[in-house]
Amino acid sequence: MFRSNKLKKFNEINHCFFSRKGGFSKGIYAGLNCGRGSGDSKRNILKNLNFVSKKMNVRKDRLILMYQTHSKKVIEIKKNNRRKIIYSDAMITKLKGIALCVVTADCAPILIYDKKSKIIGCIHAGWKGAFKGIIKNTIKKIKKLNSKNKLYASIGPCIGKKSYEVDFLFYKKFIKKSKKNILYFSDKKNGKKLFNLRKFIEDKLSELNVKVDHVDHDTYVEKKNFYSYRRSSQLMERDYGRCLSSISLI
Image (tube, rainbow, N blue to C red):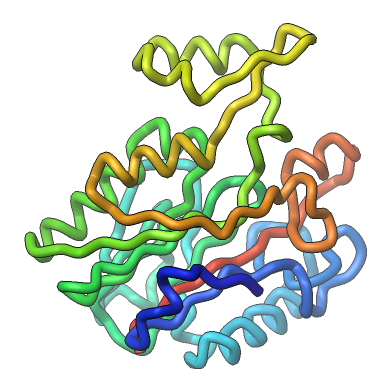
């Protein structure tokens, strides 16, 4: 389990970037797999989520998870929709006693707190969501609820630049959108590029006047701590687990 140095200073919130350690899953999912969309035993996933709810100090039915699709969709969680299936890649809420959750396996989990208006949020930010505008949409939605903000965000464990090899078409897509995006890439000897997802996300947040800190771990490299879609794909495993990150208002 990992915590943000910035967010842990606020007594009115609880948060955690959970690793894969301490869970009940076995085999390729060994550990705290919270991916309901994985092929893992549903019983083990429920036991893992129960572990998370105890650590977050909320009831299990108050863990709010999303069905994530790399979209730019943001949903505000209210009393009338918190029990529904949430199809989005970001959530925000003013409600106390519920824990907003995001699951990742190389994409970046982002936890957000607006100190002035007491709003929390979480974002699932892979390259697709970040490229489409999920970060801007989330901050915009928070500011729509209350224009007086003091926003903090922590970017959790995700794939590191040295591990994120991409092809020229990927690179071209970003450069076509803005020539400034060249700074997020570096060259490899094989003609491929390396992409800095963490820095790309950090800059998107900073442009929106959000104070950012990092729980800086490379999910691809740290096999004992994290699940990784890319690592599992390269090992030709049939599936992969997902780590969970969560934030709640106390």
